[in-house]
Length: 338
Image (cartoon, rainbow, N blue to C red; front, side, top):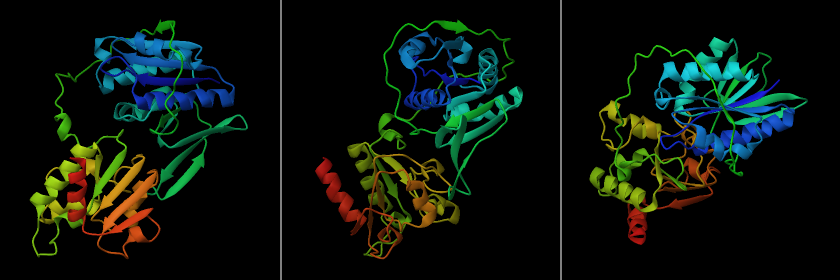
């Protein structure tokens, strides 16, 4: 029985925070089970990344390298992961739950004759056996379970453990050869929004959530989409916060109602959206319904602004509720930020 940690390098050759968190959890898991730990890296030149984590206690450092492995692509990622798993002969395989790994992990498990579980939010070892935690039924039920099938591939969610910190060194990197997979996808470049237009910031200290109230008629009977957009975007720029939204606000466009143009389903927080992990959260113009607040379970400090003193946020779902007009409050906050 052995454990293998898999990761892909970033554009600059380093390992992302999510990878270092998954590495820390993998180190702890291997130590609890008393099994050897191996590390497998995929990238154009994974040598510097291996040296950066040389002190993690892994007995072997394996790699698949080359220019074709620098980009996210199913054919190359799946082939590289399969080759690394077979070379390591591991029974437990852990990866960070990035979009790149979530896309290929089930296919790799099928090739290996194993099983894969994604969105793992907790991992533990007792009685010499690994147990994982995972949410089901739209994140309303948490299950703790294990599997007997091996190899068992696990995609570990961000925040499962503090990012690994240790001494760098000189890792002996074993190159794993594989037959060049057939590729029908060619990466020609990247298109990304300007930094000040990016609204989803997983590492931000604060999550700012907008509700459908921003698009409704205000006290004077008018809809103020322009003012709402200015207030929200000014706050995001000033506070460097991440932007979330409720399902009702995201879906208003499909109902023919006024919408905030910078919001999409990617911003959606809740049982049908994301479950972010920020130190603080501020909800505005929403009522704290269960489908929305279920996505807030990992937020450290929760506050809300609402004109309704009896809304869901006031019923134990927020640490602090401000009964006030969000337009007026955010205007004052933006003044202080400036």
